[in-house]
Length: 150
Image (cartoon, rainbow, N blue to C red; front, side):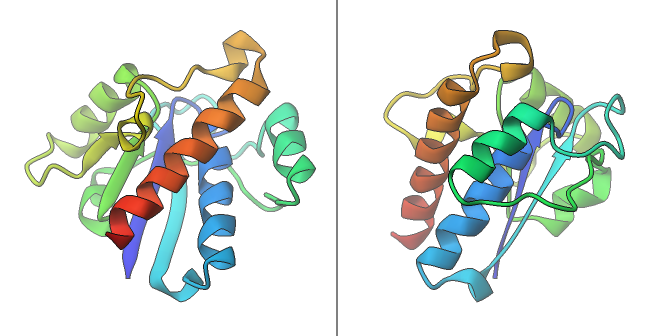
């Protein structure tokens, strides 16, 4: 089983979008039993809060329901529990490495590193552009699945 943790600053926009898109992607590929997929935050600001309404609306628009998701913070134990820990931007990566005490196994990656255009996924909390985030998330998740399957 491949275990993937998506991580962003608050775990209410980018990482839950990636979590639920990836769950949908593997389910449609008939690989649901081969994956465990979750998401978390690097900060404590949004712990316990649901997916941010515009991010939730974007998921619902694509037939994906994130019901029941509550933000949680990444823990040091997550490093050992997951095969891939996927951050959305450089600040996330630095915080993830701090939380996990480094990255000795090379499991911490940036989402768009799995695409032909590596770089950060802009935070729609600040940009307001949930469509651009959706496009980045979907392309990155497709790249992860392709990478794992080959």
